[in-house]
Length: 306
Length: 306
Image (tube, rainbow over all chains, first blue to last red; front, side, top):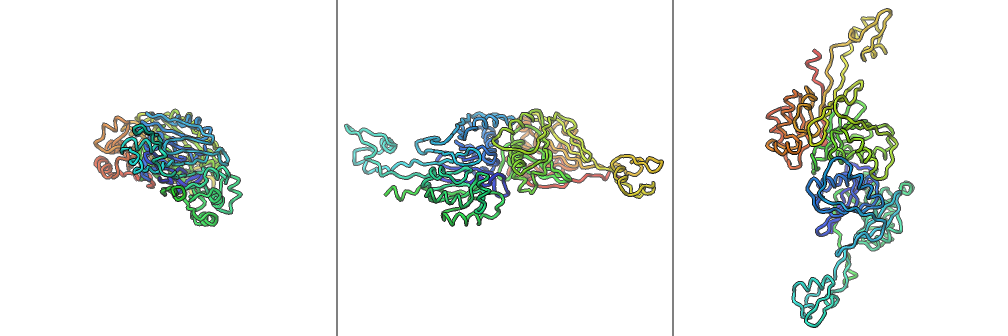
């Protein structure tokens, strides 16, 4: 599972940092978390096709998180997209969509399904779940959490011992469906190993440090937290509804995550050492995102698969 | 007078080419011609402040020419702009402005004056004039022409001979206002040299080769013409309302311009030699624009100042 930071600036972009967007690549799909202006070009540079984006999750309705949506949609239409696009976002997302559809001349041959989210479960699929929680910004902001549902290992030899033949029955049992062999019903738990942890990734959007993000991010493999200001600028951060690097690190520590990556950096910081050092004092497993940085995220199943 | 190509792609951006925008820097002001997505970041890279943009001229309402406006406006607001911004564009520009003002949460402390243009004179200032003409695209597209009004040289020694003293009277006469010395009225033409040509720059926007652009660009120092396709793709160009490199060069030759720069290149062309060579066969003084290329444009007053 790969996370690519398409843009890592805060309100205004700089030479080196585009507006915010994060791509999460899972098998067969790309999710975008936020879509600031210029995201489609960052994807061209990163070699990720916008046509593979199935879902966009918008944290809040500030321009630096949403103004790439119109161009992304129009380019998808221009390239002949047919597959629907799902857009999730806070209250106001329907009105945003309406305004976006009035920006100049274009035609789309695909449907856009817009989903208003206020918190809680956003969607539940066979292989993953997305949940959300209101965070604490100057406007309503959703933090999002992606959780992979990893199936237990299929105990092939055990299944054969029980009289099953390799084939569709194996798949059914692995997906949790009982199978009949002669007179006997074989239950999934008879041929499955112990539960396995899937990958858990949490993204804060723009927020003050807050309990709801700590709860949502609990034991995540990766927390992506905003860090608009450096340590020492707590007042400015509080005024504008943002976090400092140290505050983000405190959230990571409280949530017992495995790794923290800071993003949404003010253009005033040309060098990121100060931000990084302040955060690492509190939470050593911290990095600062750069534009186009890709990280592979794996689950820590050391505890659960034993 | 400097022209900077902020973006040179056509409908979709590529690694090397952002969506269309051209900055014209004249003393004290920056004009933007078109404002595709990502223009504000291109300006950051080019070192041109969005705060200095006084006027935007929009050729037509396709996304690749307009979707940088929302972010530009919001960033100007974020940076505390107070000065009004003038936006000129084709019919539909008022509705576009209305939709742009509904894109998420933001506040502006400056006024935006939107001007609908259908062709003809766009504005006339003391030092320059902007004119326009409908071109020939799939939707209504305006070509724009910037013309510097260059004052004739002020013949200082002649003025002193006529009894004038250096001071405000010199400036008045240079600006075309008669001045009284004793009983006598001195007329500007008595102390001014022969007329001088100012810089003339014409930008086509998206268009088929057409007479109205030829007329508008007549004897321009620089024609910036779209060249979405290479020579040999005339059918595709005609279908989509665009021009090939050769067609753009034919426009330049017919208009007797001094220099042609091609822009708005399809992402299918990774190497621009083919485009350049086809155009140069017809019009040798041709170049192909790259992102962030800056050219200085001077008037050719060799004929008129003699």
